[in-house]
Length: 257
Image (cartoon, rainbow, N blue to C red; front, top):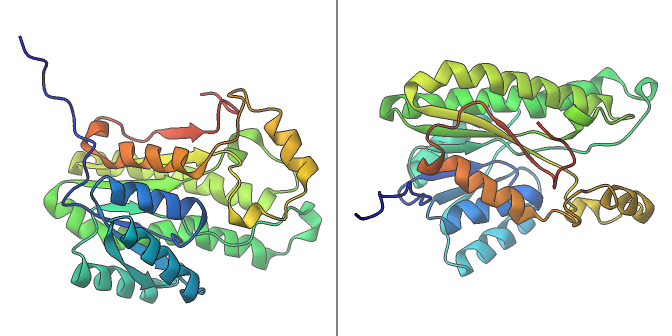
């Protein structure tokens, strides 16, 4: 008797939007989704030269996609961004709200509300605006994937990081409620919560802090961006058809469910 057919990891025919994808984890997520066959909309806000280099590298590797500028914390910009992607690549089937801003560690009394608000804008407002803009197409075809990018810091309660941890905790709550609301429409909402995975913006972080964190990782190695990208491919594919509302820690065992 032949083996039954396996669920597919192929994303051929799908369009994926990864915000903040010119560098860091977003870049790896975008590349991995493209390698699986998706047409990828790369998003950036400020550094066009870097974004164009990323897209050129992606296309040289054989990926299909395009570059789109947009502030994903602005309602009008999100509406324009999603419309431009649809006109160029097709409507968005896979949404990965990944864009972020600076994340300084400070004592709680050294923050001001404006910074807290910026965290809320990136991690709650932006996923909400993007989800709302992409939903009509996903609901019509009764298929969609929304993959929020969380963080292990919510579970670990990292000190001197209250603004980021609070906003990521709010994003986690948003993802959980959204998952049960959209599951009846064939739209799977899940979250990836990476640990500390060094990328470009960590280049100047104190080596002593890196060494201390690395010594705690049960898996015995640093995570790499493609660890997150590969997880995104699974959650975006038909192989995850019955995976709904989960928060997948990609951190080598630093936190356990």
